[in-house]
Amino acid sequence: MILLISPHATVRECAAVLSQNFGEATDAVQSLDHATSRLRAQEYSTVIFDQALAESEPNDTDASLQHLGTAIPVFINFGTSNVTRVLKEVRSAMMRRRRDERSARESAEQTLRAELKGIVTAMLLSCELALQDSPSAEAQLDRIRSIHELAMQLRTRLSITYSH
Image (cartoon, rainbow, N blue to C red; front, side, top):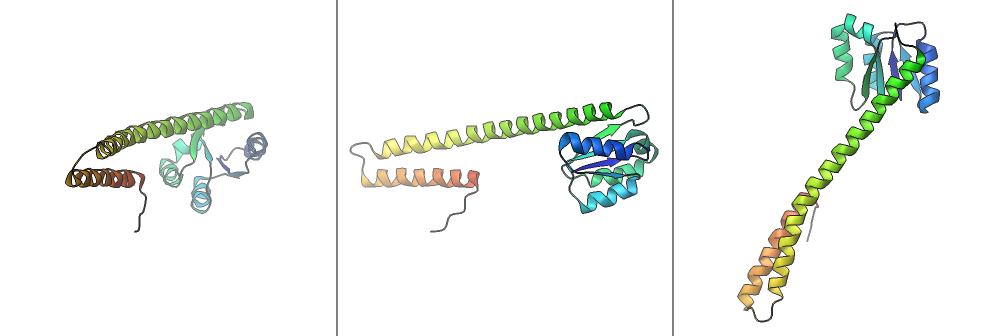
């Protein structure tokens, strides 16, 4: 859902065009107070602020921004921007958000992969040592304990609950 905040007369027309182009319902409000109420009650994907309104009421703008959640904030000067410009700005903001989310996800995956790779390598090495031909029973038990400890670290990293 998209929230559009502007006192301009064209706000309803702009909301309809946004809804049609992005396939999301679009709410339009004329004040930041109404916007904050909507943001408290509803989850939005994008919140479009009239830049002039936001600059003229900084405290109300801050209140609205505190309730954005995961919504993308977009600031547009409706005094100088037509509907085509609004569409372009919103589309750019959405593309930036997707790119940022993809980059963050890939970074998290790489970090996790690197952490787990070291643990799995240590587990495999311990298994190989435990499987060698003639270790004593005590040496095998130590290696199994080592493997168990590594498996526990792996479980902790993956946040797996275990009950036995």
